[in-house]
Image (cartoon, rainbow, N blue to C red; front, side, top):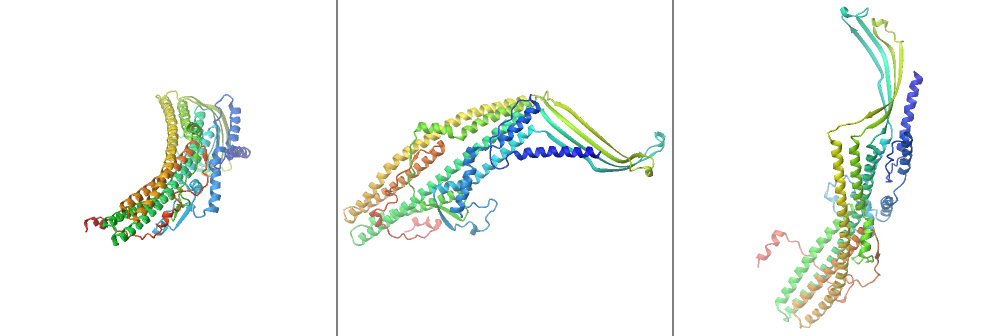
Length: 577
């Protein structure tokens, strides 16, 4: 009995160790792999299953090079770079909420570059982290589906051990033994181990294939999220540069208005002009202050929007380290851009995977009405010590013992012959979903082309706007300079200076918008096509937005801060006087 028990324990240990070894061979780290479905052939029996096991194991150890380059490698580079360059821009704790106002008060303005924005969004974005976790989830489901090729081992035990003590009595008129009383005292133990292996399972292959496609779709979704997050971060950075440029334009306009108001007051006090010119200068100053206030608000909003995209600490507000400038020139043609987008976009792969998933689900639905065949082996052993149904309790001999061993091997079959049409309905449902996915694929393909065309044409329009607004800004600056000279000479009214100054402000705003639209369209083309046909601009010092003209030196006067009047009080000013 002891030898048989030891053999059973040894057999269970070997089987469990074998399963653990197979599980250990599956990749446990985030090395997302391309695991193909096993061969659907079932005629080869155990030999085919063994070959499949080795194939799955070798394929599971292979790494997806393209995904690792865009995920793990980028994350590692980003972490190393951030630790050296930006130690203060680490992401905040996810589960910690601030409790005090001092915890959300901005304590530092941190200048960052475009390259740092791209690295930070890949490192800190919570959406990307959630997307990466989804990939791991699909990988776990895939490994769970592959486990259908392995046998199931069940170990059960009744009593470890079990002690029975009983006393019974039966009517003497109906007794069949010499005594009406019976006593039992017995120790017993029973073990059973069963190995079951599905030889024929029609649902196994399509379920593994569907899990594999879902895993590949999750990887494609991660790449899409990563590229979209990078594009959103770049757009927010360009919007921040535009806001900074708006503050510069608003500040320059206020200084120009202060200069005009000072000259108008001086001429009015000297009797060379009327009060109307002073009022016109004050009106223009109020307009420019309103513009500056609006641009300052836009700047604060743009900074916090960029901080939200980068998931920075609440106490840090990012600022643009460089002014807005043209990033480069798109050299690819429209046709080349569209073809490259078709090859690059993961949305098309995800749509194709949806079709494959639905078809596999349809095959799984049909498998509900098909037969399954399994082989099983059940080994059962039991041992007892003591006696039962003894007339006198003093006669129970505890030295009495016995044991049994039984082993059963066989085949089991299961066939759901009639299910009321459930499997056929599920099959048709998934086939209809596959047709829907095909229609969506056409829509996605058309949408990709439309996005590329919109970005391409917007880029060309912004390019023309940059050239036009550049000439407009230069002409407006020269007009303002001549208008001031004419005003100081007494041959031009204040209205001419006010109009030319307003024209210059609007021209610079349009120039800044054109630069932002151009850079945004350029970033969209790079994201939507996957190519980097961008020719960098030659370095030059002739940026009209940052160049200091002689006329700007006349406006270098301090801007006094104006008090913030409550809205209720400010709204009654027009009723006074």
